[in-house]
Image (cartoon, rainbow, N blue to C red):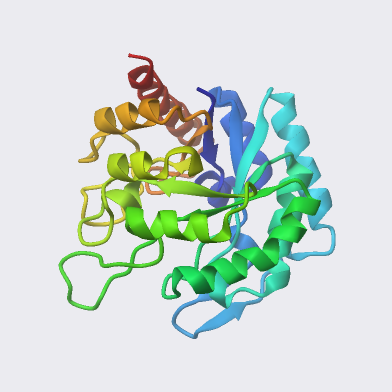
Length: 285
């Protein structure tokens, strides 16, 4: 299987250009174009913050092209991207810009979160409105399983796509080959909301075309390196093999990278690659 990882956990220390370079040096096959800095929502003020990030400037497509060239210098492609969120608080222009940047970087899937509190029917309307634009750019839209947390509760609780049934319903209501599932392994394993990653993989079947791979204690959304906590990746590997998953193995272990030195960042990237290669080996057994 082809390996990939998100760039945001590295970019917060050294910027996106160096992040792609580090991932390439580590030996990954691809990079996940994380575009969270395009629009930063402040939950305390309930406002979208102004940002001077290149993705929020007129030359945003040039920035995407530059990242693509860096990746290509290391034999990598951009396999997928992540639009800014919360989606329901982002201007439609930002979401469309994410699709544009995905295409410019060479990616084929853009992960766009559902509105956590909306019905499958309501979310389907939103995604259907975006599909013509996505098709024009040759980019598939992927929705993702989410979670919520009530104050004082011991575990997470339901949000859009959190269960196998609701996830499948979201995909099937849109009913378009350009609308697919990105399963977030960690979210699926959280008690109180998720149906369990292996169960969800089997339920999604052919709908599953992208992954966010990370580990946790099955309570909090830790986004840690695989095989470091409680998630059963042996069973997940079996399920992926059963449904004949052919997409990239994309990490989203954003809680793992904690030091900004170049030496540490490169070492972290190499450790992440080894963890996802271990998952690949399990799928081959």
